[in-house]
Image (tube, rainbow, N blue to C red; front, side, top):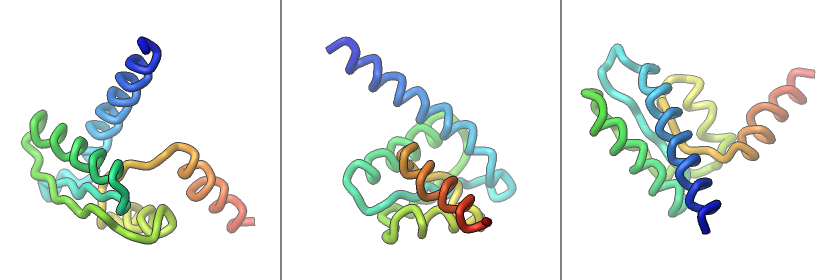
Length: 106
């Protein structure tokens, strides 16, 4: 049980650090766009990110939750600057974003 709590706390800490690190992506507008996939836990994580940013900074947060199409649809919108942050699984990032791009480039 203690290990489970530690894992959850470390995950939350990682999310907080990632959110605060990425907050600077769109400082010109003074707002951050938070997105998520259309799954229950993704909505929850998107709201957690929004709350953390709003409570610990003066930056306005715009929500764009429930985007369909998965990582292959959401990640390009992040690269284009339409969104600033979204929760993602590391395994999905590895497979879809890093490995798929390296295969396409070859």
